[in-house]
Amino acid sequence: MDYKLNKSEKLRSRIAIDHLFDDGVSLMAFPLRAAFRLRPRGENPVQFLISIPKKRIRKAVNRVTLRRRTREAYRLNRNELLLAQLEQLDMGVDIAFVYLDSKPAPYSVINEKVTTLLTRIAQAAIDQSSTPQENNEQDC
Image 1: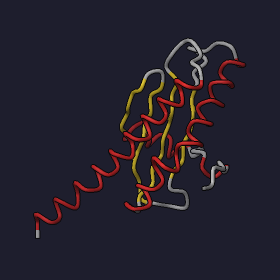
Image 2 (image 1 turned 135 degrees about the vertical axis):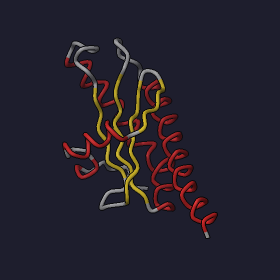
Image 3 (image 1 turned 180 degrees about the vertical axis):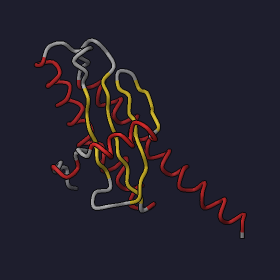
């Protein structure tokens, strides 16, 4: 299994980020919020970004630590929870993880919440892809 995170998996496009927060769906698992948007599969099935607001976490050292913890939890859990379902559905997803708490959380909590969010995103992708197919079958 490949656990590498490539630069191409980071969500950097301003247009894609705007679409993500304007048209996307938001899920909560405190202390994280995940906004996601399903899209046709492109070069990368998943692109993500992590936001740790300076307003909530004032010290840069703590923001960097939380960003690393979130990235590590995502890197370890994305393969079994998200990528397999998206490959079957031939879809892609953009994800933004936003940290909500004002205190740094330990890695175990962040890992658990990232796992929960990825599972819920995969389930939402399955639900959303099955809904149009059922509507098309009823029309025939």
